[in-house]
Image 1: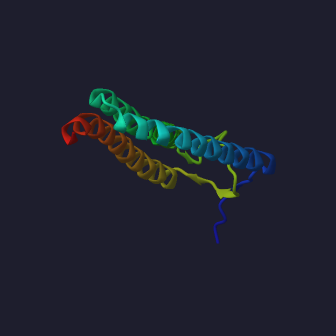
Image 2: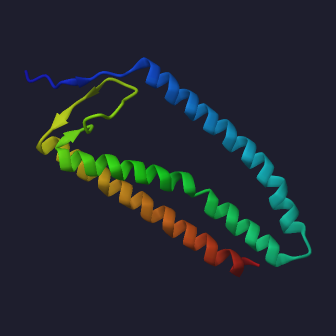
Image 3: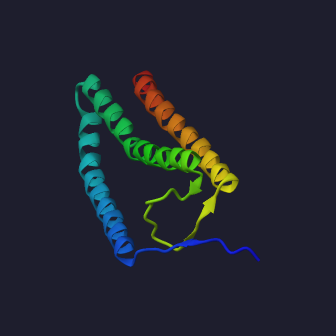
Length: 138
């Protein structure tokens, strides 16, 4: 049986990523709790133009994090295809991960590239849709 080499996880890196994730989640909840009253005040304001600008801004900002994730996934996919190894050399992982090479790595890189491009398109399309259609709902 052909055993694949394993990229070992770094426990310190895993703890760091968990801390970053939980911190980002906490910051997101705080920002959301601050944005909701502002959104309610803007929609109740006498100036509907200001309310629409606030709603558009919040909707577009909500799509920034998925767009940044897409950029990261695109980078991994392109490196995997170019270097013919998945995960690419130098990648840190939070879980022990088998290393694929040659055709298997390229296949996984292409799949990741496909999904990252679809997700990026959906983010951009949603932002454009939110920005253009919010004004028509008033």
